[in-house]
Amino acid sequence: MRLFAAIDLPVPVRQSAAEAGAVIRAALDGRHSRSRIAWIPPDRMHLTVLFFGEIADGPAATLIERFAAPSAQAPFRVRFGTLGFFPRSGRPRVLWLAVEDGAAALARLHAALLARLEGLPWVREARAFSPHLTLGRFKEPGTLDDRSAIAAVRIDPPEPAVVDHVTLYQSRLSPRGPDYTVRAESRFVGEAGA
Image (cartoon, rainbow, N blue to C red):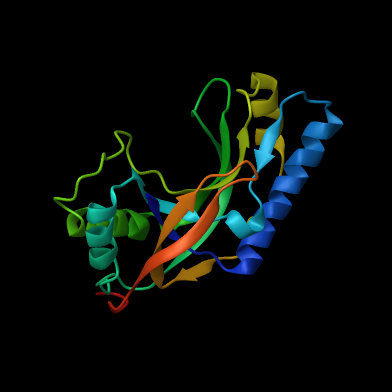
């Protein structure tokens, strides 16, 4: 099964992020950009902490069991800010909102999950963890003009959100987009300032 761990964001945060995407879309439409962007609908927005990919059923059952244990992580706040792109230079493929506050706590959570799931057979991503909220994916690499135009757009970032758990999702791909099923949750039981 295809699995990933993510932070669930409150509806107002996801709606605000989608509105930021609409502002960017309007700016690109005003420039008659030919880039096609698949915008992430609010009900599918999440902040990915760890992507596992395809896991065989036996190891997946162990992963789900280990994942569901409470976490010593303390609840924390996440606040989004500036726009960013992957790759970080050249023609853009992914447009996202940067994590302005809470990035250190997300990095600790990422490391704690890696430690908790040590020994399970899955292929770790080679790139470093970079917390972000994806707004859209270019269907073909965007242009440098699009990058400049998007970077010039001023958006109202979403309000901060309190994070008190991390969710393990199973993702099933279909022609109408991915379908996500909750497989486990790990609640944060640590105390602030600990």
